[in-house]
Length: 428
Ligand code: GLV
Ligand code: MN
Ligand code: MN
Ligand code: MN
Image (cartoon, rainbow, N blue to C red; front, top):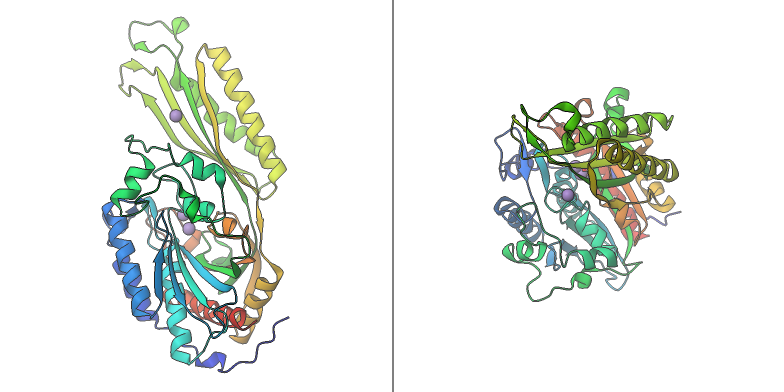
């Protein structure tokens, strides 16, 4: 339990909800698609401008700013005992194509406001407090989810892979990183790794991205576990040819192989028997992509998740079996079946859950314990630090689309609970 002797009252914590809303709105203008959609992809001009905006705010809050070789950004408020391990909070600001302005952003701008709240209240941290902006939580550009936090958590496999990773335009990760001012004179990104135990706690504030809190009228969700995500890339190669002249018995249609595999993904997911198993084919590309040409190549990217890792892995095996069978039956080549990531789930830490629960209670904000079906940088921070996550309601659970919305009041509540949680963890 926490030896928390408050030098201030929870009632002295006041969130500047209007300024925070203005910042959320302003950040959303760094986008490559028109409002209300947001598209902000790793190391693009808009991403670099958004990063500059955040670094400026970190400085205005009196934090000392550091960036690592892939652009994870850290803003530190030194505690009275700076030799103790720090307490960290943060999230991401990259946004998938045509998404909204709250995913990730609430956990970055909200973290900075939580620091401001504590400073205004006169609070003095014992353990240092750190705000982290994680690089590329979204897999949009290089196909790798939680790139920054995965690397921070010490993934040797990722550090190795990034030496040769390219995007869809064949631009290398290192070239893209350098264009944004990172990875300057190093190809080896293991400098980004943090040791296990680098933080005494990590807390991430995020919109729920699901409908439960809003439906139940609850202001705060406390995450107990994050579901296990996996992603797979598949390529089929057939013969292609003229859409009029090649008769049906003589075709090896790579597009139909992809279509059949997409349906097989749905079937295997539903066959798991659990509502917690999900699968999505979010990318399906046909080559050459002409109405009168039989697809000679197809490319699929498959996302599948479950709170139960074994059940999720079983789905992956069945998808692979189907891909092989479909290729055989259709006379096409399964030229690639690549599991990009197959991550285990993560559990929140008891001590962080307790601090979040106590903070909610003291602020008279009702909470619910829940799982996160979306993944977050917290999935990887849990490998090097005790982890916890705070959820706030969002409109109809909408996320990853422009209609995503969270009210200023709900955001302010989340920031308040975050601030008090950080204060407790800092003094523990
Ligand atoms: C995060 O963006 C996710 O896809 O869960
Ligand atoms: Mn997202
Ligand atoms: Mn997110
Ligand atoms: Mn491919």
